[in-house]
Image (cartoon, rainbow, N blue to C red):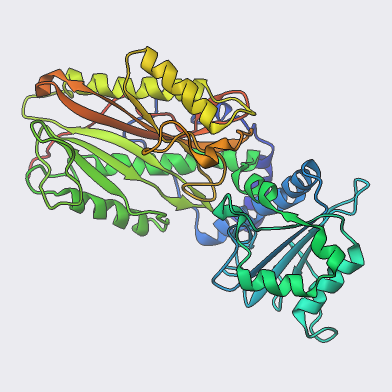
Length: 454
């Protein structure tokens, strides 16, 4: 596919429905446990697609956020290799780092006019931002920043300084001091936190992104299915660390990124708790749980699936394990049914827990947004260690956010002599403001691992 054709395809995707339920594959039907691996774009085509997305976001999302929050100038400052979390997502595909000191300035002149985008650095940044600094005319970069601000007389200048979120706290102390030193007293008085802009930018997914996100999650699901197979797992020989590193290697071999080290847990009849980070071989009759994520096209996945290693003569997992997975699905339903625009994550947590407990379940809920980052900007619905109140759970839910619905249900397994087992699950989903749909379906039955003949 040529770049011209790719950009045409990207333009078509930008017009696709925002609701993930309307996108193939939808979550109305359960995704196959071992789906085929979708084609993965070469780097040049990825770059063209990501720059297309970025231009659309800069053209539409930044102006909307600035006007919603009454901010007419947003200034981002970062040095090479110490990029502001927001700026790192605004670099074009060939600007891998900020290059020396990079300054991005957004200015809304009002009156419905186009928001101006400037880059002040030595190298520029393609055609996404207009160059705002001529080093021959003004060698001092800080002085030029001051001139740009003075020329435009903004009423409110947003800077990414925040005690509430690392995602909105990307302006380092030294760069903040240098910037404030060149501002006038009136300009310093007009500085406000960039928190709502930073979080809004990072958490919001566009229609074009969501049109492709299902394929990204499908790739992750396909890799999980490959690993949870007799071709990879040899009972009595393969350890959980062997499987961990198989997943990590597979991601690398495919030219994808990992944003965290995968983990594999072994839950075994008669063994309290879990086996993890051990060289203990996987055995027949074990329940396995993988926590796995990839990075592709600037977006991330985060998935937890469970598998059962069949004993000789078995065709399925024990009924008690399958009941545990159904319990986990029921907790998922409790969470997604209570997600409402304008409510805090803590409010959703309280209602979801009450609903699950009323069904006789033992839930632990720790769901989070996903997108540019794995544990992404936005609210939180619980934490594994806190089931009552999470500080950033006070942030309110907004529409068009991708979420990892992460949680567990704990219950006894009759076939394992009543042993208490944690049934953990995590699936990526999309909240359009009214309902939640799974981006590529969710797990409702075990991956079954049958030993292949040696």
